[in-house]
Image 1 (cartoon, rainbow, N blue to C red):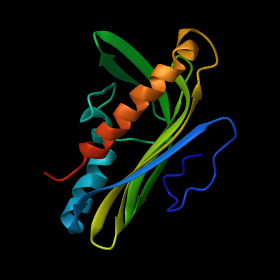
Image 2: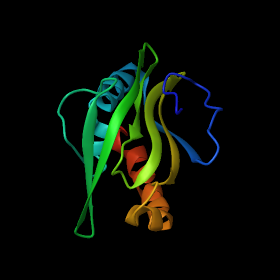
Image 3: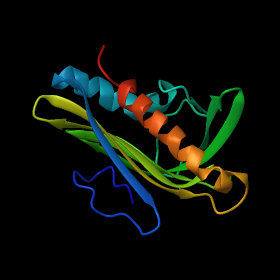
Length: 159
């Protein structure tokens, strides 16, 4: 759905809130190599304040838990890696949420090039969880998602 392999993302299933953010994170071959390596090792999540339940690089079919702690409340987010993209100019992955996640949807993190610029694209499809407390909290979760997207955009940036 979020297609980390595709330069243009033009499909979004009905009923999902679609978001796509593109930001420059560096310049040149070394910046691309570093970011391409880091994105496939969960750095976009861990450098944004999340804890990931594996030290393994992303792999299709991998199931894990991403944990966030906000204002003393710990939220566990079960996910499954759907797709991994690795080419000379593109590196990234997408995961889908699993039952128990606060929302239903998919997210992708893609490092790619545009000339000498190294870019990070974040794509997300989000809708309320099917039932329970999180479904009622969906408006607040959208605010939290915007905050997370800003953190992701900074996570792989060159210093």
